[in-house]
Amino acid sequence: MDLALFAITLLSGIIIGKRKLLPERIIDKSDKLLNIVIYTLILLIGIEIGNYREVLTSLGNIGIKSVTIALLSTILSAHFTKMLYERRKRN
Image (tube, rainbow, N blue to C red; front, side, top):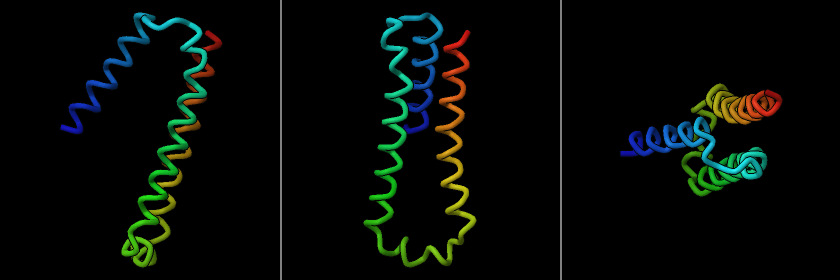
């Protein structure tokens, strides 16, 4: 179910963007909204991790590599999303 919802949401966004169904003023502000949503998700993930003592106490067992991969994935996703948006905005 989660995968189907993800796919439907993504495809809907692609169709809306491709057909230019949103006014330009909303599209211009989507970068800021996207950044707010990404940082909110990061905050919520941190809160979720902080609520589970088992996760915090087993971080040593999980390893620094796992934490690094998760952080880099989040940071790079935000960076490339912003970069692609700015590139699209120029064209």
